[in-house]
Image (cartoon, rainbow, N blue to C red; front, side, top):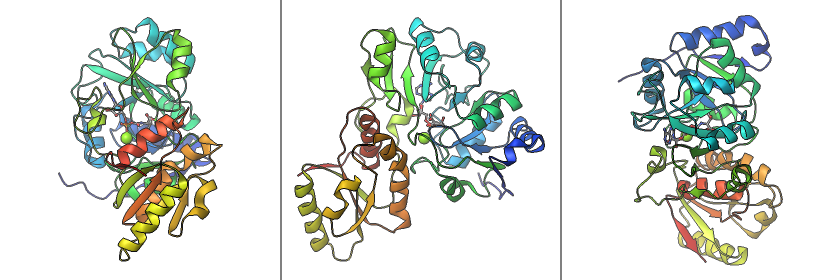
Length: 348
Ligand code: TXA
Ligand code: MG
């Protein structure tokens, strides 16, 4: 289907203090239109989760496969019970510990939310964001808001307003500029429909944080390879990919530098770049994009998707990414980088 060009209205955080602008947003959402808005994780492209037409429009506008379900965003914890059959004890504990915040929980759905929103699944992903604008638009519209990350399907998620402009200018009714995303990685996704909860996507809320709330160990099924069976539809699609070829280099920085130098000699006609921690930027002779300091995982997470998007802006053909430490938030970062590389890891 061919989507016509829309006159996109841009609103700033300041604009959102005016009731007239807030009304514009809720009218658009109530009319099954699309609104791009900030959350504390990444930007979302939102629409009325109760409307099959609105959900279909999200899929069409993102170019997203229609079996990859959307996350439903709510503004009050108790609203979760409007859309689900039941919540396990673990789900209730996690809701109270981490909502509002970067955690998405999967429940058995009831019939209120249409199957178009859940990609045909009988389960539903729900999240209560802590970003003020996100919560405000949910409260003002009095609707549950279905919102995947605001990026064209396959591209890195958007953590800066210029990214959503690149992807959705002229394609959505309203875009709200909330500045740089606070966290920069999408929410942790946990399936709570099983006896023991399962991590489907790692994020800012780590396995250790979840286990300390629950008091027992849970499993992680987020790292299934490209051909393996997947628990979450989103896991089977290519993600976060710049146009150039991406390789993760695992080994000492000296060995990586030698490997990259060799590639520069072998491919003089190709544009080559490295993504690595700031401590290593002087180890390379090609273009380098810093992720930030080894000692500041929050800074690195915040830079990750921008770094991947910069590779396209710089016109890079071959991208070498330094394997980062997987402790804490590093595990979620490596999950995204491995997908961006199409599971291409080289040990040097
Ligand atoms: O931080 C975030 O979660 C952002 C912001 C905008 O809230 N949203 C986001 O949505 O990342 P999206 O659609 O890009 O990723 C949602 C992930 C997908 O991998 C999808 O397959 C999975 O959640 N998911 C959604 N509903 C599911 C369900 N019922 N069962 C299993 N996985 C589900
Ligand atoms: Mg996404």
